Length: 266
Image (cartoon, rainbow, N blue to C red; front, top):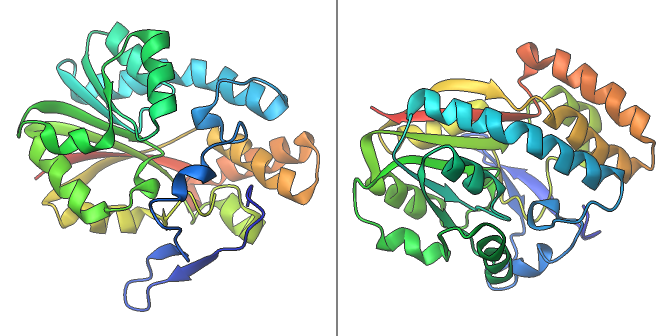
C-alpha cells in the first residue's frame, strides 16, 4: 500500500492459505524495500511513526532475547533477515555466538559498520553445516521468503535436533485486520508474499517434522500497525491508539496483530 500499486490477496481453494498476487519478480523486489518509509531497513526517526517504531524497538529487544534464552540459553543464534542488526547485536551482548543473513548489501554493510557483526548474504544459508545452529530467529521475515519450502528445509537441516526456531509474522485473523480490511497495514503488499494465520504456521512446519510449542503476542504491534492503517485512511494517531488498544484487548479471541511462534523439532 505504501507503493500505491494494486495487489490482490488471494486464497487457496483447497486449504485457504492467503497469498499476494501478482508477486513481483525476485530480481526487482528489492526496489520495494529502498525507502525510508520501510522502517525495518531505516534508521531515520523522522516523523512520529518512525519515532515510535524506534522507541518500541529499543524496549522489545530485551524481551525477545529473554524469550529466546528461555528455550536456548546459549549457543549459536542465526538471525535471518537481520536488517539493521539491532536484535543480532543484543543477542551478541547477551552471550550468543551470532550469525546474521541479510539480502540487502547496503543494509548489511551498515549493520556491520555499526555493530561489528557477522552478517552474510542469504545464499550463505546453504553454506552452513548441518546441526550447527541452536536458535534460528525470523522477526517478520517468513512472509518475505521467496523459496519458502526449499529454504525452510535447509533451515531445519542446520538447526540442531534440540534447537529452537522463533518466527514472528502478522496475523490476518486479528481484530484490526478485520476492522481495517484492505487498508490493514499488516498486509504490506507486495513485500509480504504470504499472510499466515496460526493454523497456516502449524501446517507449514508440520511438513518439516516440527511443531509450534508456544504462541505469544507482539504487544506493541496493534498500535503500530493501526498507525500504518490510519495513515492510509488519513486519520490521526489518536484513532490508531484507540483501535490498536481495542485490537490488543481482543487478542484472546482473534489472536494479536502479530504473533511469535516458538517451534521445535518433533
